[in-house]
Image (cartoon, rainbow, N blue to C red; front, side):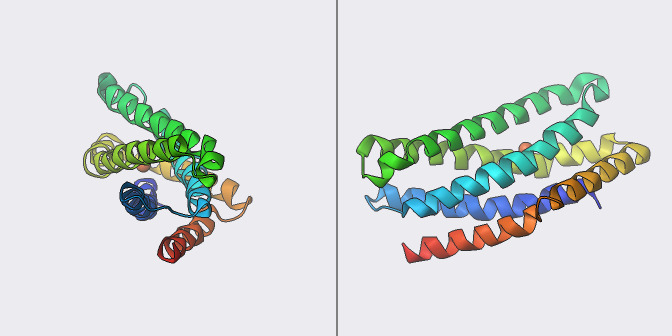
Length: 186
Ligand SMILES: [Fe+2]
Ligand SMILES: [Fe+2]
């Protein structure tokens, strides 16, 4: 397993859901409504897959290994990426908190959903672009063959650990498909 390639593949799935969220935002901007189920499933994907599965591996396996490498040059880049992860988590929590109000067509809840989708999509899109095009290439250059091997092994272990709880990637791939269907059924 190649750890960096695995993270890039996971980005592709996250980008699919970001695209659907972006379209749902446009729907709300035009005065339309999405089903509450669409947002419930989107929250499930964002918290289980993007946050607990993907961001966890980046922060605890990759950033952990990179801390203080290159005389700390990577530390500020990791600090910014970590801040963006946190900000995304907060947006998802904010959406979750107003879902009941949204279901009841409460205008402030709808506004908060709109606001937080905009933050989430915008931040995470830039974040993924930076990781794929700037941060990961920098990481690949800075790791020795032994460090790369150790990272790949840690990713394999994490994969085994999470697959005991049910294949996370497969389950979320299906969830992304369900979201796409729900978007078209709106
Ligand atoms: Fe990240
Ligand atoms: Fe990422």
